[in-house]
Length: 468
Image 1 (cartoon, rainbow, N blue to C red):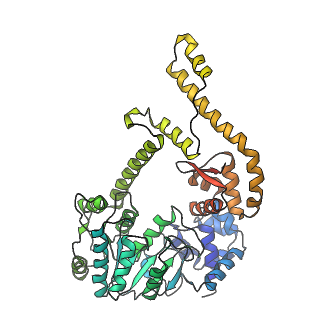
Image 2: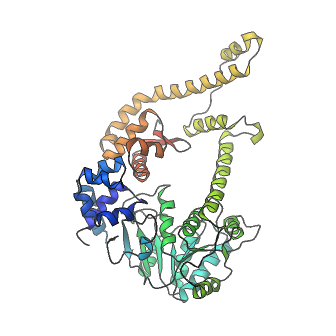
Image 3: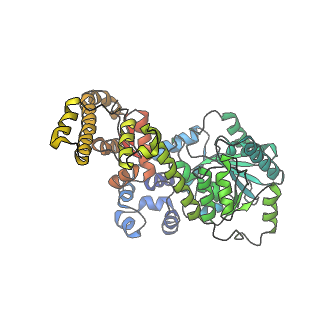
């Protein structure tokens, strides 16, 4: 590893992951060490960093970077920086290339045809067999298979590539010491023997809901085309599909039967212009006959088209989840989303709405002999507020005693996040804005807090101190 590695690790810690300004930073400063040597004026005048990032960049302490480097070396994990000759050229072409990535194994010959195969974690038996057979047949034709190492379509694709005597690369959404999911150690060792496992995250980085979507851009980037086998509209495989299209990569999808719920996403992509792949030769023929690397399916298939479908599906899933949380007999019986959210918040806090005291009910009814709608809503609001305050009062003294030791063990960043959410629950984005740090750092801090049982999800994307 070159001398510049320690500075690149430090720089990545400062600016976060999936940063769209990496290419500009590299072009302007030429090396991570030069960023390290830069003063406040030079950093601000570059226009490439947020105020929060500049504050981090002015801290020249390399201890965290040194620990990360030592951890990688101790676990036989290689590090390839953006300035290395081994850094994949395909990464350099995307908007947000990783400053560095960690690796076990060896990247295959970059001159070979690379294909990403992605899909659901819970495929049908037919979908799992298709993924395996496609990967095996492509590997027999010297094609490198790229996927994400998840259970289901991903792992079947990796194993198919190995069975075909080819190479495969697994791109993780967590650190190499914390691979997800657990229970696939033998398969991952096979992947290392026949290719590589890589991650842009440090070895002990725990996955988050942001790290998986971010890593999908790298799966698409390493490949000349992407094949979606099965996946619903809200699945991560459609995120990879959107990344592939935004990177001007060809998108293929396997048609599925109308009775196969797992094929909704792939069928949707086909309806919007993705190429159909019913056999591996469909992909090989495209590769052999394409006129240029930019010979892809034209619009209307765009990243926005895919994202719009995914967002619509997420909204639908959220409505159903709220419905389940309320225990209502039907959606028609709900009075509106405000009431659904209130009930969901109570469920997430492990609080059940308490019945209104009889005296309180009768007091409301006796006003003018009727209970007006406005009075009813005011009464309900007060009841919910009282429930939450009662819960808080009973647990506050206990929390103060039980958290002292845990707080003393937190990193400074996790401690800052804890104090930020201690008064009012906040979303990761709100915490990021308030502290001036990347959302990825916020999620890492929240993960640390969860390990010490100091935080809890109090609503949709809201985090606060754990009260029980």
